[in-house]
Image 1 (cartoon, chains in turn orange, brown):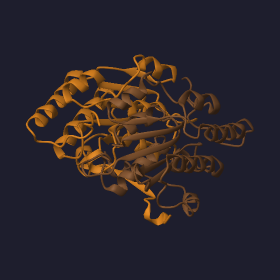
Image 2 (tube, rainbow over the protein chains, first blue to last red):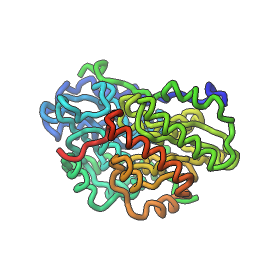
Image 3 (cartoon, each protein chain N blue to C red):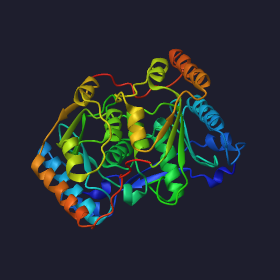
Image 4 (cartoon, each protein chain N blue to C red):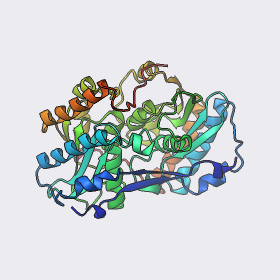
Length: 203
Length: 203
C-alpha cells in the first residue's frame, strides 16, 4: 500500500468568530451560572454562523473559574463527525494542559459546562477526560424533542455511572435560557434556513 | 480574555510506525477476515510501541475492500483522551473523503472493523459517522475482563440500536486471535511494563 496516500492526521479548529465572542469575557468566571451563560451564547452563535449545531462547552478550573478552553460543535466547520462541542473543548483543554488526563496528580479539579446533555459519544468522552464535574443546561430528552437531533441510546442510570467514576453532575442550570437557544435553532430548521446533520434514521 | 492564550486547535496524528506496518499491505483487502487481521496486527504493535492501548480500527469500502484509513488508540501519542482507534480512523476517513458523513449521497458503503467492541464513546462516534457496517473481534465484557479497561455503560440492546440506524453488526470475527493480542497486553501490564490510562474508578 502506498501509505502516503492515506491521511496521517486530522485537525479540529475553533471557528474564527469564537475569538470575537471571547474578547470581552474575563479570564475567570467564578460562578457556574456565568460559565453556563457563556456556553449558551456560544451555542446560539454557532448555528447562526453556520459552523455547526447549537451546542457549546466550557472547561473551567472548578474552584477558581479560570477558563481553560471552550468548544462548539464543529462538525460542519471541521468535516469530522466526532467534533461535538465536548470533544472540541476537552481536546483543547488537554492540549493546553499537555496531558490527556485532566484529573491527573497535581492538577486542579476541572469542570465541563455544556448547554445540552452530552450525546452518547460525548458521555463516554466526558467519562474518560479526567473532569471532576459536569454541569448541564438542558437534559437529553428535551434536547431531542426540541432539536430533533438523535442523542443516541443512554443507560438509564447515567448520572449514577458518572458518580461511580468520581464525576458530580448538576442539571438544569439556566435551563430556560438553554431552551430558548435550542428553540430558536429549531425554528430556523423548520424555516429551511440551516444545514441539518446527524439525521440518519435507517438504511 | 486574551483569546490568544487559549488553544485554537488540536491535531491527532498516526504514530510514525504505522507507515512501516502498512508498507506491505495491498490497497484492497477483499475479505472481512483480512481487514480484521490488519486490525489485530496494528493493535498488537500499538501497545508494544508505547503509543497507546491495544486497540486498532480499519475503515474500508465494504464491497471492494479498499482501505480508506486506519486508526490506533493514540491517547498517549496525541495527549488527547478521546483519541481512541475508532475516533482516529473515522476522523482520518472523513478527512480523506472531505465529508463528515461517510454515508452521504453518492458515497460507497463504508465498513468499520475493530479488534475490540467500541467503548461507549466510540459507540456514539460510530453511530454518527455514516458507516453502514461494524465488524468486531472481541466483545466488550471480554475486553474488560482481559484488559481491565473500563468500556463504560452500554445499553443492553446496543446491536439493535445500531440496526435501527442502518448499521449492521458482525461479532466475533477472528475472535481467538483478538483475545491473544489483548492477553499479551495484559501480561505486560501485570509485569509492570506499560503505562495504563483510563483508570479512574472513583473520586
